[in-house]
Amino acid sequence: MKNFALKNLLKNKKIFITGASGKLGSMMSYNLGLLGAELILTDFSNKNSEKLINKLRNKKRIKFKFYYCDLEDQLEREILVKKINLDYRTVDIVINNAAFVGKNKLEGWNEKFEKQTITTFRRALDVNLAAPFHIIQLLNRLLNRSKDPSIINISSIYGILGPKWDLYKDVKMSNPAAYAASKGGLIQLTRWLSTTLSPKIRVNSIILGGVKDEQAQSFIKKYQNQVPLGRMANEDDIIGAIIFLSSNMSSYINGQCIKVDGGWSAW
Image (cartoon, rainbow, N blue to C red; front, top):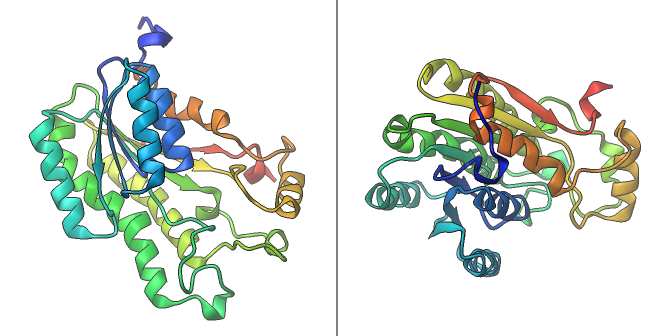
């Protein structure tokens, strides 16, 4: 029987995280680092990235490297992975977390269906779906060198369910078609990869429900009334599933899409 010591559960595992400086990405990075993982992080060059870098530097036991990259740009993705290949011999875990989400301020994004633009639709598919595919493809050689490689794709309940439009009445956020389509595609990509890359590489997805951030109080109230647990998620609700799929505790879990939604999808 395997002996799991939580403190060093991820010791020396090299974990690559996209969208590392966002709210969820920062939470993942910090907590996985505390459990002994060596972090390979990427995101835009912005204030959030600098904030995360400083936070990790202040915790001297956390090993990490941060690479600036716009994942929407194919060439930048290729340059990013070339740099990683120079710095690392293996990658153990890939967490595809970066995404355009409902609160992004993009032209033709937070609009009624008739005003959502095809340009932004394509951009969202590129970041939310094509980029994870491309990153996995580019990192395949490093993953295959790992003793226990794993891929975790971060998806959404809106990849499996239609939106409840009354939630979005009179608020400055929406549920764009491209978000739902890309997250649904990521779930199916997870299943496809799980049989294609096995038996060497495990591939799973986490399907997130709503995470409390800076949403309007009217949205939060309506949302939590739809959740059997009676509240939106916070970061602490999500990290357990991330740790589980990143560790050897999930060594026989493959091709699964684990819902972390407070029971939203059980109705």
